[in-house]
Length: 153
Image 1 (cartoon, rainbow, N blue to C red):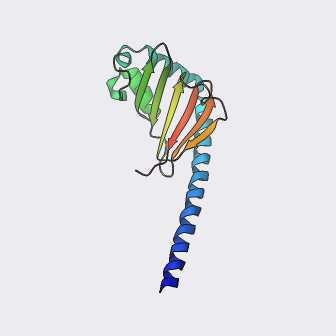
Image 2 (tube, one colour):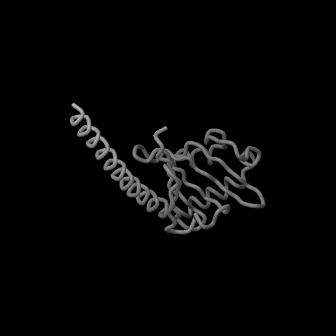
């Protein structure tokens, strides 16, 4: 009976390791696709980000989650049409940042956030990649990055 348990345990561990590796590759493919789609519309995203950073309501709610419906119609519509659930903004003399929480993905991604930031220029360099546990950061270039959180919790 113990031998049977050992075989089952080995099978489960092998399957678990394989599926995690497979999910990681799928995530990288999905992120590469999203980066390509973003790159086609980068000028539009830059314009949207500038409008957000200049918005009075946004600047009175820095650091808070702001839903598209909280904003005037033109910004709201553009955010919703781009699949944005909410934004979080930092706008001070030290750094500026607009984080877009997207609805662009499902499993195996978890959450995918598109971020424009002047806070950490190293991470925004094109081709930059790092991971911290379940968090992966992909630099797109020109102050843009994608953060993927694949934590199942």
